[in-house]
Length: 128
Image (cartoon, rainbow, N blue to C red; front, side):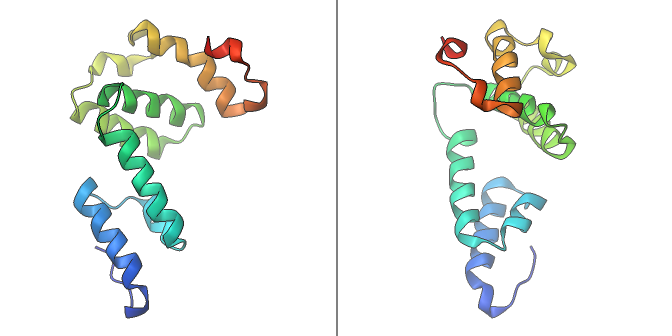
């Protein structure tokens, strides 16, 4: 774990907690360490969205993460979510392309595109 000065004990604690939960300390967290209050909120939100009980299975959540990261061509985040997707039992065939995923996830493709590039064009019809 990254060593920090005594002045940064709060950041050290946040990093240690993140490492204990995730088994890694990714570059995103290290960069956000310059803003500890934001990092703490981000990690809590990420934990609830990607690891806690909810209406979507864990592998579906990570697949949606793959879709979002791929839309922005962020290889780093795609790889993180691919690893987690497979770790929680996701079907490796889905990684061959959106057409291999279930229809409900395929239907998110257009919504993902709008949210990624021109979210102001989103209407209630897109969600219905």
